[in-house]
Image (cartoon, rainbow, N blue to C red; front, side):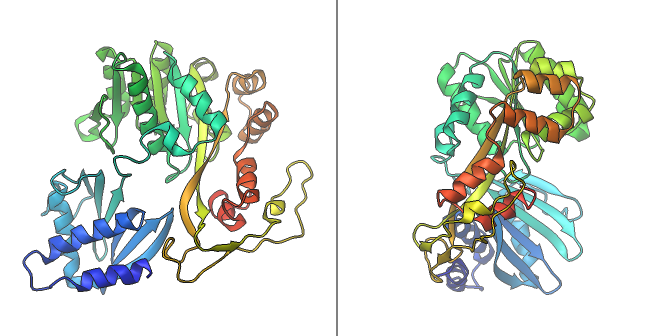
Length: 410
């Protein structure tokens, strides 16, 4: 049974005349989405309906539609359980669902649109999933080296990638490993916008730009709280970037996320933010860039194209194979993957060492991203395209999925 049919049957079992009809819809919506392994729920208002979409393994699926008159009631219920203002429909709002209504972390944001408020619900992993580095499935070499960096007393660890690549999940896993390994002997503090997951053993703060408490200002004040490890939710501007590197140079281990297409682009973006090359060279410990690719569903897979990996463009020869891979076959009615052909995701992660002589010289000379990437690969970095090629060759994913995530420029 597809997730759409299963959800429709569950909604159909509710009584529209019941006093708890809307609360039951919201509860069912969250529970069913979580059971379907969705990471996000989108409630999109249109002129005639409220469209329900689930993001499963990184891809949006339209699941159902509610009557247009029901839309404001559903969004209002979401506001109630997350402590938002129900009477404000003209401004964006964000909040976390109270523990009274959900045992797991759930974040809700609303946004005013032409046809009413759109709501987005982020469903975080269950309490026993994706909690530690060992559970993430990072490449062994990357995980081992990252653990060494987490034991350091100073420097910046930069986790990069686009939205939805799992940066924040990796960051929280790093914090939990630091807490477990230090047994409470290290003071761990964070500045986030917003706090997405509560981490036991860390002192977490949420910035409030409207009150003058932004990331850069908060980071400078936080350093006077005697922290050993600082987690900055995201570097978004030059002021925050400079404050993070200054913190690293004054004896703090700084863990942060940063939007960049690959690890080399992260370095050039920092330079474009007017961060001095010597600060990057002295303060940066490592750069990790990651992506999430859907795994081929083992329950319904019948075959994969053996030559799929050959379709990748060879960086050495500049040629591509004449063999064109086809997407793997799968049963139309697979229960495990909802007939998508994919189930779960695998993480690809490249780690750039800024201290290798070639890369260090490139930083000081402000070389562009392609040249930095070439030098890093020559120094031994296993790149995302190389990791993707291996994943296709091993039958873990498809060439089409690699193109969807990494694009045709690989």
